[in-house]
View 1 (cartoon, rainbow, N blue to C red):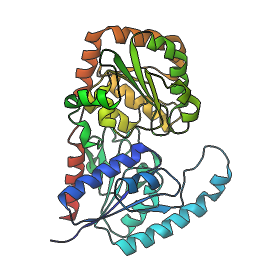
View 2 (view 1 turned 45 degrees about the vertical axis):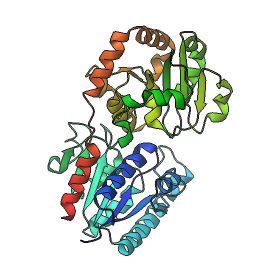
View 3 (view 1 turned 60 degrees about the horizontal axis):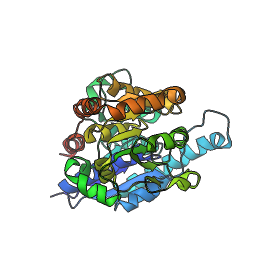
Length: 362
């Protein structure tokens, strides 16, 4: 049997990195002898996270264009040329059978070079509003795996397959892990647990909200696991106590979801997909500082199906405490949100995406 070779590229945030790792893991389970190489952006988080997951990675000197005039923008053409040349060298040396991009700046030069070389390429688009890299790449890609309907205005319809987003397989059955999760995080089983997720880097406005509301939340017999992000740990670790755990990053997402009764989260595409599978009541607080406001669109798609609540950052001061208290006291509402969000889950996403990749190499 031929030994296949796969290059995967995705990075900048956990939302691009974890889908790429999930796809690689599924490919590896089907082709144990396959060779894998990841390509990321130098000095971004993928350079740590990918080796931790057991894969080799090479870095390109690439970053995005800023929305204002900066020194980085002046360097952009040089970085792009450097990245295209390095991507060409990587592809010539590694000779992949398929190249898979999950978004982020590094995937641009890599998939562009692969397509020109005639190597099949697959794009996995997590968001309801695609980023500029994937929009540009879609013209030459062989397949585009999407997580939301109605993306025809961005991508060629005949190339699109609705698969959902890859999620960690250990999230599929968290109900059975609740007791061990409560033990793992040393929680009080008689209190409700609020999980606050600000994304891999953290979310300043969410952190400010929790700081302001913390005394009120705790007064309602609630304990808090607060993932504040590595940029903010120094500011908020002073709130650690018997009922508050402030952490930069959570390794055991399966257990933290199992322990949670209510979740407050940003609405990045990967988080939304995970929360659909996990099926907990969620209050989404979308980040307004992302391209095309795509987090609001991601969250709205769930809210429209009565699967979650959403508060915009501008509404937090006036509405958060009321919305949270009403949800906390209304078990029927919690159950309804749980059931409705679960209906939107696509637990087979990773397998379906890999099925599409396999069709290109057969």
